[in-house]
Length: 427
Image (cartoon, rainbow, N blue to C red; front, side, top):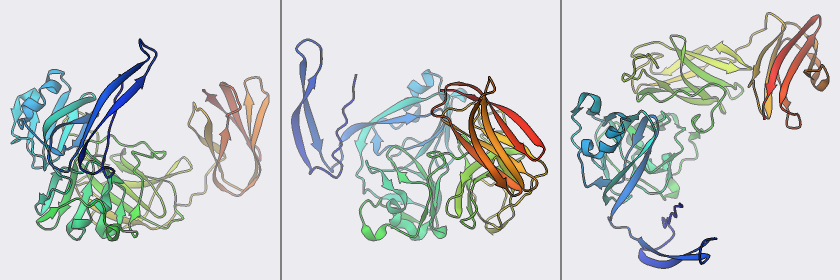
């Protein structure tokens, strides 16, 4: 099986194009011809859209109005497979098949929806498409909206038409765009995704795709940790979150972790003095507490050199307590400095490892340091560092591309200190 995708977005004029797909193969005849017809139109057409639903929570939309609006009918295949847990709209209506309860009025093309799944699946909807520039009516406050264009658009550009009234926009992974603080880690808005949006007035949203003066160069843009993870784990979306923006001096680097009751509830990576974090709340559908609870205080910590440091900060906006859909902005006041109490290899990460691993160590006083790698027979493989260091925390990297799979040992010597740690190389 194979799939041929023909995408004429921005490339071809409205028209009907016909041709032949010539498929060469090693079967009988060696060649098959398949007629191809591509109709390019800016008008509404009757078509289908397929949503890829992941395990756990999804925030989705479709840029067509389904022929069948009843969500119980639309979701029947997922219910029969016993993989649909819950579906919600932006107004608080929900469908729980396990309780045979539904008060969602019907699937509306303007709205986005949150869907919690026990397993991944696809959902195909059929109906009449809407134009990319069809207006979406927004009311003052929060709503969950659809995305109409077929092509991805950088989020600050797509929303530039309502920038003056936009408080915040969030995607299903908690990434957000806050114009007032010139920050965005949402990247592109994409077909099939739904978005939470909060505006300060009733406005009409028309997605902008091409307008040179609408692209803001002053926005601090950052890649989401769900695209490029840091060293701290990323939290599984729970269907509800708040937004935390941390600002600091660009010299401070590392991962930022947010902790509620000692549990990691959000993480991000400092980049050029800023970091946007989705702080995840507790998922009410599950039995365990898997996020922060309403009005719970949380701590902000820096993960650097395999150590966690509690940070001092000032609050610029909001509060340091978890509130659903809240927004808090803080400024980290200073880089944490800590003189270790002892000589130690504090961490080796990752272990087991593949191509490389990081070896973190501490020195309570200035010392000559020797760090070497040995094999199981005691033979020296390589020396990673041999020199003088002042007191502090350090790391060194072993690049092991030319070394075979096996068990090895890291030895650290400093003054009268001597320690050995086992590491496992797996290729």
